[in-house]
Length: 469
Image (cartoon, rainbow, N blue to C red; front, top):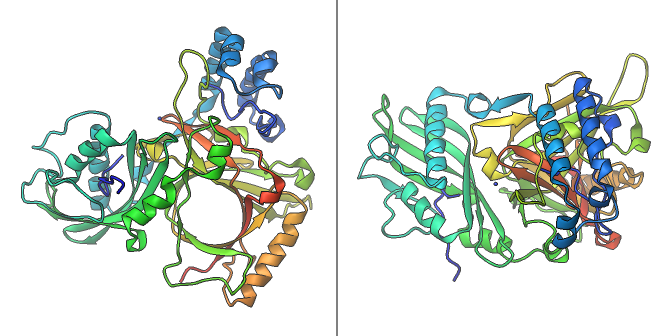
């Protein structure tokens, strides 16, 4: 039997998105025409000048073999690129515990913030002061869906035990609400790196109800943990434990990803018999949402890769200071038509990037751009969503996407499912890039990898949002 001693609410990383493409990778060097941001664009152009000078390393001819990367690595050029990007990267930050959508009342916010600090202290190798801890009472009741050691009286103690077994453990307290005068409910995501050869990323999402004593100086007297939909912990883990085909196909290219949690619809909603599409719920999660106003249309292919203003840092993938990074997948793309006074055809492209748990666990998250009329980049707590998806071979702006959307919409309606509509009465379509992996370090998003997959696999998906009853 696999060893699984995670604690619910408490269990737990400079080239950029310019991942060097190989014969099996797509060029993810972003088009600077998409990122006309004044002074910042100038700095990024200088960065690219350094990158172009090292074309044998960063261009389309090479990606792989550590020996050749070490031979071609230029420490001076890398250092200059790092400085230039750092100067142009972070312009503000998102204080997530001050977000009233995630934490609508002061009590839940203060408990969540203190708990997150204690979790981060333990995962960072620190020792908790039991006198001031939220778990300072010796008579705490703890009911959890996870297996726990007999000697673990509190979740923090079980967290310390988990760190001895798993390669890495991260937990993020995403939101909270007051249930009663002495109770709060917190939503969390837990991610562990399994100690196996392929270092499987296993993610759990759920909630904890905390009963508090002494509201003036609160401490936890009872905690009840549940996975979403009361799922069985071993079933959730086993679905993610074994190596995924594409991780093996692209072995040594990148770490296994924290995958989007696909939940069974809680009300039993299913597609019709012999349906070609799939219906599932996307678990609540923290996401990064870069956006831009696009006037180039389908020919510009601007939706195909993340724009430069999505990135807040860079990731060193070679050299003496190589960085470990965490990947998430898939990246979601939505394209919403817009009207202009001049009659010019335009649209708003929005990317939805799942934030790695290790980054979501921070109180302050970096933002690389201030929102304006053309560009945006925000963090958002995404609530549970119900969607229908259809396998698709291609990219978000391929002409064939329109036909796939129509096919999906008609099939969903035929089976009696209700599409969700936007404020203008339009169905809400999106595109899942399962071939994409967003790469995070503690300073935020630093790189994206686009895997090249055979067309017959239809590994991407065209999606349609459904009403969640």
